Length: 191
Image (cartoon, rainbow, N blue to C red; front, side, top):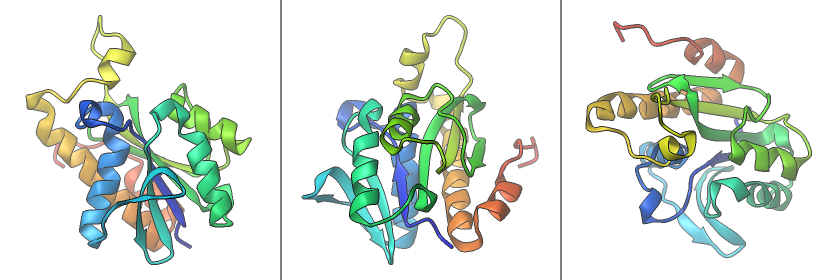
């Protein structure tokens, strides 16, 4: 059964477009383009939403650290449970181009996931982590995640976004178990 609410995390505003922290938004944008659906503002709250049949694609327009209340509100409005939720998020602990799916788990220090966990009162929801790392020596994590990809990282970043959009589609079409088997592996140099 497909996830009914799919949330991409990021920060609103032009100054954050193209930053590592906004890959959740970018994966949803790519998925929406592939499905030929468009995002629009919604009067129920500060979000951008697209509809793919019974599935809502949601980009909270709060800052990353305050994503939880918007996610909780949409789950309530749609009369869904956390089992119906997939969150797409950046992960600096994963190498650029890698993706990891989990049916549940901890926030792992990610403030957007922490906000959702607090709003839901638990961590029993699926997440798709998109690799943006590693953090270079002498870089503060906060500066790294808010930086744009270097020019030489562009092709690998685009490949990672494509893999994440493919993983999302596999979850929707074939279930998270098969998607985890297919996508939770390191990239090989031949890929």
